[in-house]
Amino acid sequence: MQKTNENEIFQNEPKKVIVMDNGTTKTKIGFAGDDSPTAEFSTILGRPVRTDYPYTTRLDLYRCGDAFESCRGLLTKVLPVQKGIITDWEHMEIFWEASFKYDLRIQIEEHPLILTEKPWNRKKNKEITLEYFFEFFHVPKFLLVDSGRLSLLSFGQRSGTVIEIGEQNFHVSIYNNTSYSPFAFVESEISGREATEHFLKLLSNRSFFLTSFAERQIAADMKNFCSVSLDFAKDFSNEKKAKIIYEFPDGQEIDLYEEVFLVPEIFFQPSLIGLDSLSVQDAFFELEKKTEKENFFTNWGKSKKEIFKKVYLTGGSTMFPNFAERLQKEINNFGNEFETEVISTPERKYSPWIGGSILGSLKEYEDLFINKKEYEEFGDSIIYQKF
Ligand SMILES: Nc1ncnc2c1ncn2[C@@H]1O[C@H](COP(=O)(O)OP(=O)(O)OP(=O)(O)O)[C@@H](O)[C@H]1O
Ligand SMILES: [Mg+2]
Image (cartoon, rainbow, N blue to C red; front, side):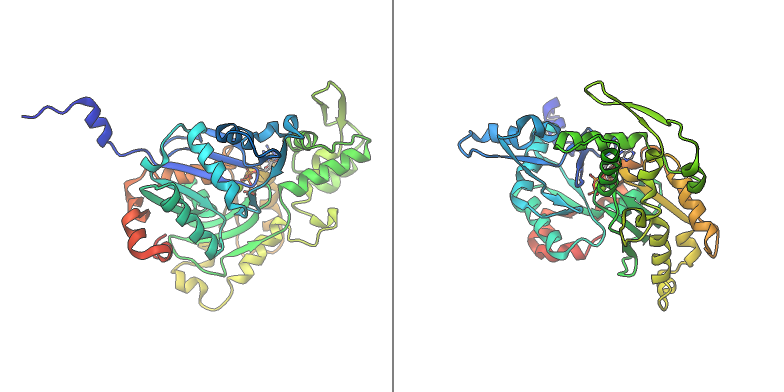
């Protein structure tokens, strides 16, 4: 009998599926089957002002991430993802290459890849993404999945309602196994960026002026100390008592009062910052209304209640304490036909990635991947024949 050496066995092992979530601010990347991403880093790039650096140095500079400020003058800031959609392919390609090489230390052409996308991503974007991964990165298998659907999977569900609020995305979407419907999605203009802007304004009213990129990052981090009010009128009229004392990196301190409630309140009352956008609860009601179109749920073989009775929260901007409780109160106190439960987990910031990790590690989902042969045979259109 022929002896197989250990190396051969190893080489024949299928390589682990890579899961990547390119958010507007943060990229989460890692291996399917793991509980959390291997790395999380800024999706912001710095384009070198000078063009005569060697290629490898350029890759390092591009990936300056949160150190952007210290490289000021050398770099121009580039945001290749805007509102969850890739808008700058040239820089995205560099960013992807560096992520595989430096953060995961893998040869991407050996690994199947799951990439998240915004619900109702544009057709053209889907096709370009597919071309990049098959023709430039030469992945053996590829799957592009809606972040809401993946989040749902992270909660162990395939049908239901998802509210995702990140840095520049706010959408409510409903799912029923693998069916799609154009009525199943509502967006709002209010997300993490607006909350940070509002915090900056409130701080400037108190004579703390944070203007540079690094200082704005401080305001974004300060949001971690905010909390959603369960009774806004009561909390707002409370006696002036510091809720939190925050220490800036330079040692200066600030007592935070009602700011801690005012910042996340914009998700429930966008008019506080003069925005004529849907609040979280109104976005939920708007989607319910949209589905009242003829035969919507009959076509899905589900009742309205089955889809809307549970709402799953995902994305960094739902991380404020009491977000789920307040939303549940708003939905059920204002004329919902049935009791809705709002569900959140401590790791909901990573829900799209975790859902990808589950999807990539289960045999039952293997057929959903597009493989190289199918891509070569059917071209871009293959993306509409699958999940
Ligand atoms: N603990 C927290 N409390 C409040 N806000 C938070 C918390 N953690 C993160 N955020 C905010 O969540 C946003 C980032 O969330 P997330 O990582 O889901 O977005 P993203 O994937 O980069 O962007 P998007 O999904 O919009 O394209 C930022 O605005 C950040 O300030
Ligand atoms: Mg995101």
